Image (cartoon, rainbow, N blue to C red; front, side, top):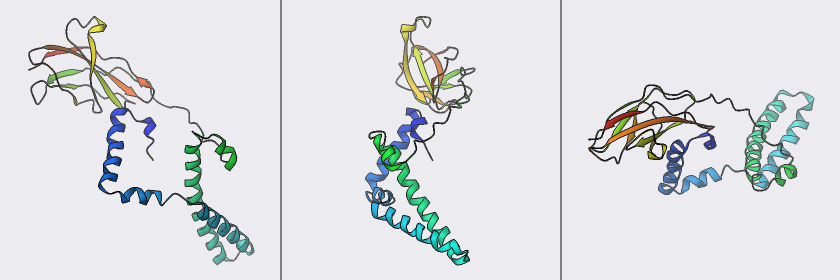
Length: 207
């Protein structure tokens, strides 16, 4: 299951936009998802069904054991969804965890690799006037890439500005550039824990 909090903005935007577009095209889609959220009566019913099946299967009858298995599967589906909803709701209402006896979700220790500097960046003219295409070797653990450009002395940090973001290291397109101007570029990887170091600087005149 996707966890959007682990995605960069460049990755999250197309995911969330796809959801909004899908619902605008067919408003019934959200209702289908909402119908899967267990209601109070459903939770009571599956709880009672499971307890009854458990008691009945105590004599070891194979058919009763099958009914218990089916009842348990239904119980697991409904309550797993409910517990997930409670944990999300507990972000705004922490008291819900104690009220429902739901343990907090276990926090996994991050295993994100330390981001390295993008290697051997190259710049070339883009498909249209005023565009540049940058290429660099993919960085392990990178979710996206941040592009910075500079007009003038690249040794002066104030001359640098953000000029693009991309997800494919071998195709980082920069648009809106001024033809006839020499640009300096640098790239850094973006991961779950932030930014990596900048790459070496490359330059090319825009056409």
